[in-house]
Length: 303
Image (cartoon, rainbow, N blue to C red; front, side):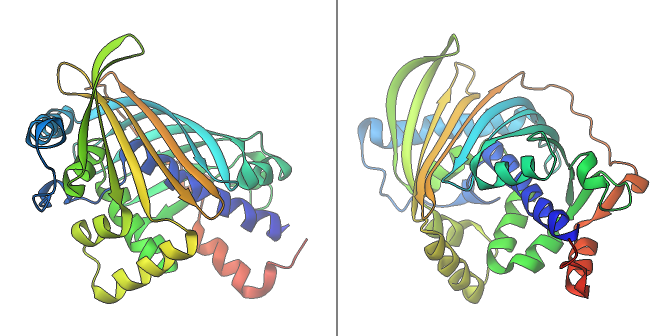
């Protein structure tokens, strides 16, 4: 049964993708990166940059919001997520994640799940409830704990980037990424779910942005760029829609990977909502590292 268990722990890692899609592409310090004077003039320049700095301030200061979105990562995964997140002191929140397709979603359903799971995010860790079929293989425990430091250690340079983003990314990081890229354009006025908004768009070089905003050393950056190349990831197009109060209403990220298109869309509402998140009961939780230890101990071949 351990092969099923390990496969489903891999699926739970996608809970990280769910949080990062509702937060954003960009590290904790993207807001301070210089655009290098590349923004140009007119709507594709200082006016857009000044407007986005207001969005950066107001959205960041709101500290919490309700979120709803969809994420597609080529043939690997498609999912929808909804819940609420708080970024007043790191990222905390709770999301319901439903896999709608891809190899991860198929594996989850084949393993006895219904395609959905609950995820809880705390400052240094997150938890994924994998359901009854998973619990039957790990002593009745439904939740897997993932420590961000552990993920960083296991995944190398990409894990370190994930750790930084999971601990520090907030909804305004999409704005920060556009500012850091030096490539931002005011597209125009549009309605989003009945809300009047201003639409901005730009292109982000993922490796370049990471080099500007992360704490990775030269060796880690080289390793991360190699991992990105292996995945076929180069640039992303980021679009944001903001309301009259300079609050983010919608964000999309689009790019290409070796398994197909990356496409993420998130809607934000109810800024300032109260978010309460508790750790699952210890008696109902297994640590991801413990499961890996069992696998490496020779039990992974059990059927």
